[in-house]
Amino acid sequence: MSPALLLIDLQNDFLPGGALAVPCGDEVIPVANAVQPHFDLIVATQDWHPPEHGSFAANHPGKQLFEQIDLHGLPQTLWPVHCVQGTPGADFAPGLDRLRWHAIFQKGTDPKVDSYSGLFDNGRRRATGLGDFLTARGVTDAFVMGLATDYCVKWTALDAVDLGLSVWLITDGCRGVNLAPGDVDRALSEMQARGVRLIHSHEVPARLKSEI
Ligand code: VGL
Ligand code: ZN
Image 1 (cartoon, protein in one colour):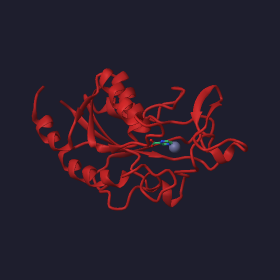
Image 2: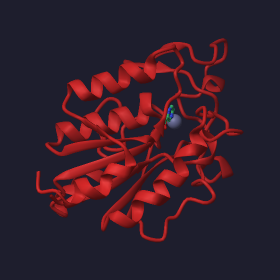
Image 3: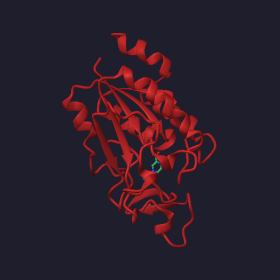
């Protein structure tokens, strides 16, 4: 197995007090710090929107927060202004160890299309470079954790499956938005149905040692 750890959107705006706070999102930071020493290859994704991004309700006068619209041909949930490039909300969580990260892949930079996945935009037109990065290093297994389970974590995991990787979701390292009750459970089922395997962070060391 040639593993990589993918840390998804561990940014201030997704933590309690942030613009798009994920309930208990701060609880995953110690999990990220605990698993990092077990990996030789660690990458992070960063939601990185321009102020005029089309996913912000504020940029669609008359529309409500969390309403669904059509954004240049794709369904789009309208979010609070979050993770604006260069703002403190877009910074990584304080207390998150990042000394051993190999690369950061930014996404959501095109105002016309959102990018939940760390690999491709929602229209699958542009790649972030993360897929090529993993392929170039011969990665076979992606261990995914972060925020939010029902959006960026889910789409990153599913895209990684599509790239042919074995995907492991570190469940205690993820928290979800649950806009509708049950969204997180549905996301977990969807991932499992597509071959993503769920593991607890405590199982990671044994899994990395196993040849299976
Ligand atoms: C995310 C909604 C909007 C996420 C990012 O990181 O899950 N969710 N932008
Ligand atoms: Zn976003």
